[in-house]
Length: 397
Image (cartoon, rainbow, N blue to C red; front, side):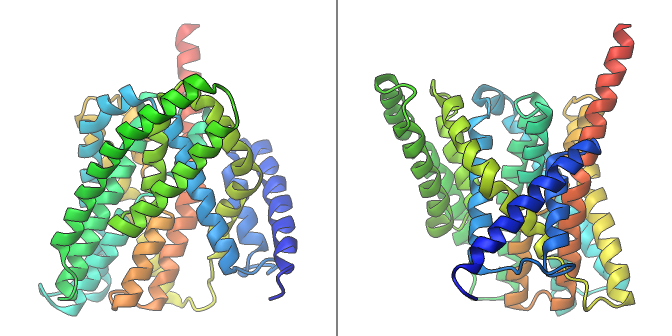
């Protein structure tokens, strides 16, 4: 592919993402839904106007990193500390219930699997894929609704970060049992070490940025250095600790969320994210969808896989939220907000392919789950908030 072809691809992505984003808003749906549909339309699966390339993959990764950094900047740290223990319980339920549901689904289709057999590990791995939560789309939806900083939004963010950490640990244990060369203990240690590093480095970085902000308030050097910090934390998380880069980016945002110019930094980040990197990330979800090799049995399994993955997240997270004294309506929002799957599920699935825990035909089910959850979650969240707002208005009258 010629180097300059990428400019054509970017032009098509930006135009279609914006047009479909506007159309989605006209239809009373969040803008990200339109951007995902645009990706489906212009991607290889339908019109083929844009082909997935390594450059676009990397740009999409930058997009999700910036989105999670922005989410960290908008986090209310006091509220995060308050919801931490509750978020941990919700995350645990959001891992255990889908893990069991996915394993039972596989065994329901292909028969029971004795412990330690190849089929048993494949069944468990199907459940592992379901454990991963991608909060980036929920974050964008909550931002559009103005609900990101509330108790529900903060709980979802906190639970999703913890959810991914637990999911990665579970994945490592499954691979460890399958592959003797993998050491689950080292991954648990690396995960704990990352949070120790993040806490220690975060205190130092916060003090440095606080002094810079006091000396050079509202200057562009603050957002520029903040962006560098975001990328460094994202890199360090993946490179040195084996943690998802989006977790590192979110932690970087949380470190800076309490400085005076945090909203100014977020405003500057929003420009590049909204205009370029965000649309590329959301349309890239649509690019990955292909239904060429689907047959009847795989299609049926994929449909059941999507249904079980969505329902088990809502049940697990929603019931635990309710047990933690959230209102019923807020418990449902938390369950729905946690049901999105995205880049982490893809990473888990690709890892399964590489170690022989997943065969290529089942990868389509993962893609369908990502697309369906990415489109349905913003719509359902919007409906839940609108319904609550309408009920509150009627009660006042």
